Structure formats: C-alpha cells, structure tokens
Image 1 (cartoon, rainbow, N blue to C red):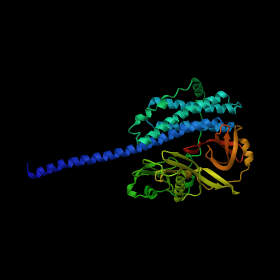
Image 2 (image 1 turned 120 degrees about the vertical axis):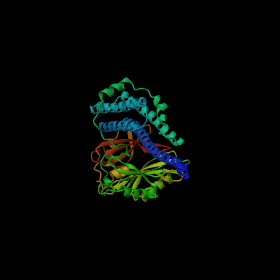
Image 3 (image 1 turned 60 degrees about the vertical axis):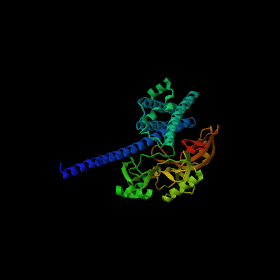
Image 4 (image 1 turned 120 degrees about the horizontal axis):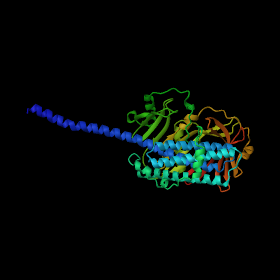
Length: 450
C-alpha cells in the first residue's frame, strides 16, 4: 500500500470516532433537553393536581357554612370545576390505569353529590345531619389525597429526584392505595347527576387564569420572537445567546418561552411583558425571616414598575416564602378597596433572599382602569347576610371576580365560627346578597384563604 493511501486510511479511521462522538453528543443534548421539558410538564401537572384536590377539600369545608342557596350553588359549581381541572392535570401524569380510575371515581362523585345538595336547598329543603356528615367524609378523602400528593412533591424536592426517571413513584402512593371505595349511595347520586352544564370557575382569590382576553395588553402592539428574546435577557440580566427558545403557548395569554441554565421565563407575545419566571435549584437553609422576604418581594415588584399592591396571604414551605399581592384601589369617595383579580405571586428563597418565582398572569389578564362607586349597602346592613353560625369581626371593601368573568364590589367580612374557625364572607354592596365564602387558614406555614 502506498504511503498516501495509508495516510488517507489513518485519517479516515481517526475521523470516524470524532464524527460518531459528535452525533452522540448532539443526540445526548437533544434527549436531555426533551427530558427537561417533559419534567417541567410533569411538575406543573403534579402541582396543579395537588392544588385542585386541595381546593376541593376547602370547598367541601366551606359548604358546611354556606348561608344561602346562591352561595351553595356557587360552591357546587366550584367543586365541579375543580374536579375537572384535577382530571385534566392527572391525564398529563404517568399514573397507572388503576389509580386513574380511582381518582376519576372520587372526583366525579364529589362533584355530583355537591350538586345534589345544591338542588335540594334550592327546592326549599334544609340540609340534615346526614348531608353534613357526607360532606365531612368527602372532605376527609380529599385531605388524604392532598396529603399523599404533597408528600410526593416534598420527597421529589428533598431528594432532587426526577419524575421522568422515576415514573413508578406515582404508582406507589400508599395513601391513595389505602383510600376506601365510596359506597353505593354515592353511586346513585353519580347516576342521577351524571350530566352537568359547563360552568366557568374563577376559583379562589389566587392563581386563576381567566378565559377572557388579557385586559392589560389590549392596546399594546405584538412583539417578534427576537424582541421577546431581548426582553427575556433583560429580565434575567443575562446575555441573549445564553437563552434558548423553547416554544410558544399560553392559550388566551400567548407567550414566548425561553430557558437558561437554571431559569425559564415567559414573555407575552402582545406587549412583550414578563408574565412568568421560575428559577430551579436546591435551598439548603433559611437565613432570612418572613418579614425580610416580604420586603424583598415588595422591592422586586417595585423594581418591575408595578403600581400599588397589597399583600394578602403568604405561605412558607421548604425554605421558601410565597406571597400573594393584589391591587390597591379607592372608591369614588376615597374608601380603600382591595382588588383581588389583579393578582401577583412572588416566591422568595430564604437562604439568600432571591426571587425564584414570579407569576403575573392574574394581573395581566385582569388589570384595567376601574371606576369604583361608593357602596349602596352599608357595612352594618351587609353583616345580616352571613350565616347565624358566624360572628362578624370586621369588614372592608373588595373587588372580587365572578364565574361570568365580571367583577363585583363586595364587603369582605371577617367572621369566626363557634369553634374558632375564621371565615371570609363577601356580600354584594349593590344587592346585599352573599356572593362568596372562603375559609381563612393560619398556621406556622403562613396565612391562606381557600
């Protein structure tokens, strides 16, 4: 063999491993990116499922205190919507068919039974002790499911584990396996109320995303992907070439999505505003107090240029503090009003005090110029609308969302029950009717209204 041929053969032999290595590296990076995106989908679905099931327990709890057929009807609609949301979230998770069937049965029965009680009260009948006991049992089942799902989330966080790599974890929830099958009485209710009209659910005064068009963006121009990339880099304070475009989405709030090494951000396609941000990473210690974290969250919102916001509720979990801020308004005669639809959520890690999650979807969807009239129903008259089982402690004005995608000005009445349970009742300032009811929860983890 000639020397030139030998050299050519050796060159090709050396090039083949390099080329194969390049192909392998490209495939490995593509697979890693796909797994990361799938992990985001799983974690979001698991969080949504936990929130929906937890919300069902809260709605069942509130049903025990409902003081009017209208309130009970609204709570029944909420329960049906929460059950539907839970089913959708569950469909995105790798549960076994057995557990999917068990979840679906419970979710359907809970919604059907609540609607049965709503129809009963509208007919003029009152709930008896058996009805209240059944609500209590359903709430206990929702609590068991919530506890199991929350435990799974905590374990994944503590161990730094991956659902993609360990999908079998979702099929080994002992708490779900231990759930009793609901009895035949509930089967009868399920058969009687198997078909329900579609109902819209605004949800608790928290992270609902309305189906309407984003009101705060309606007069803004659309942006290109390149413009959104520039805004994402500015928001994350990183070079544009360090970001990867991961797609478009958002439903009625269209966004461009970008990711960096440990962060992701969504930029609205109309107006180019950051609407969601999340940063990954472990948090090993809590060096900041809740008050320090609150100030950091307020400074974060101020730095983004948002107007007056009022802190409503917060939650401490896994060395993180999540704060719910809502809009602060005034009536035409100068009375302060809290505006619940204009919601922003900021999560601060307590190790270094940095923001690791920001969600402005509620604010972007609902914020607009408002003219708030003075209330026609005085506070003292509004107090008569609450259940006789509750004592009104205080009241203030609040704008709340409705299932019809409108807003109502209400008196927010802070009440207590005989057992010390705190309840928030919302009474319409125009009609004097109770519109919403929420359970106020305070513990070592924070304060929430559900």
